[in-house]
Image 1 (cartoon, helix red, strand yellow):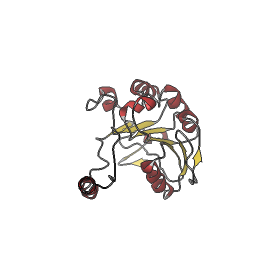
Image 2: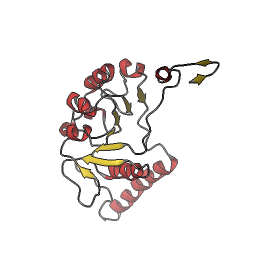
Image 3: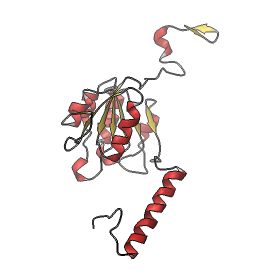
Image 4: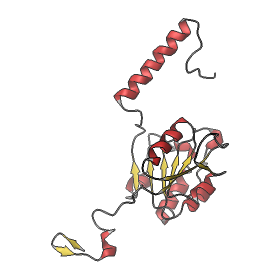
Length: 196
């Protein structure tokens, strides 16, 4: 294969200065969590022709996506495993070494939920061993501290948790606060009450 003024063997291309990437169109997407954000991700993934499956505490009625009962069962069936479930005691370490092994050496983990949901030492070990192809993370177990091992791995993409960092989203968030305050002082039910 020509590369600049020299030729390289086909196998060397992937190890070169710009390794080949994995396309998402036509790939298999697994969502751990199928709430409002999980459904929005699924809708966008469908536009890429991805087959979509999910796991959650219970199957969601009215969805055309395939339900699998556990994260491990889901991971074994997908190319990309996107974690978008709430944090807390019930989901701590939900994505563990067994789930990562099931995802396999061609699979990618994307965590946009909470750092506590992924067993971070198991993730580092899986990445080091080539048990999974790579990871994209915008949350970490001990935020804001990101382990040096993850920062140094070329198959890992790290970003701050900035999904809501658009003018439109922040304006909508501010408007929701104002709408809740207005409802409260008018003696009406709150739009987004928080359990105490």
